Length: 157
Image 1 (cartoon, one colour):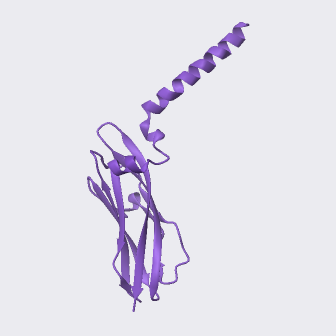
Image 2 (cartoon, rainbow, N blue to C red):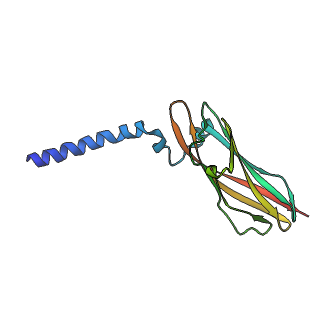
Image 3 (spheres, one colour):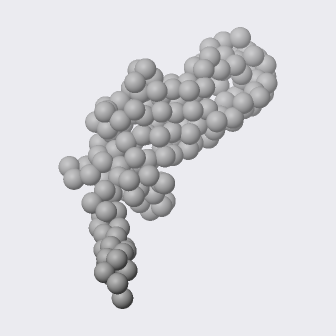
């Protein structure tokens, strides 16, 4: 076996042995794809509610993310929420994308809330699908989280 072949073989083995260590050293990158339901339950809960709104009146959907288990809301991470669906017949939305950097989230140490303003335009019921992306931190690690919530909005006369 030539020196070049042995060097390539050595570097290949070295690279394969270092990859698992890289995942351990950077848990936030490993968590990028989202956590299992059990892991998520240990770090946060997400709820979405809306009071009934009358035709022609303004209201809002409220998304609340509660941080649990020794974690806190990462105010430095540019949290984002998007209303993922459209085609509403009973409501109008002023906007569909919300950002922490724009002041859309009201965040404290262990809770963040987002108000999604809307206007009732016809009687009926709509369901908003809200996708969020945010950061939580403990004293050891920061994690990037993705979560979705559905909120039912009832419009009455």
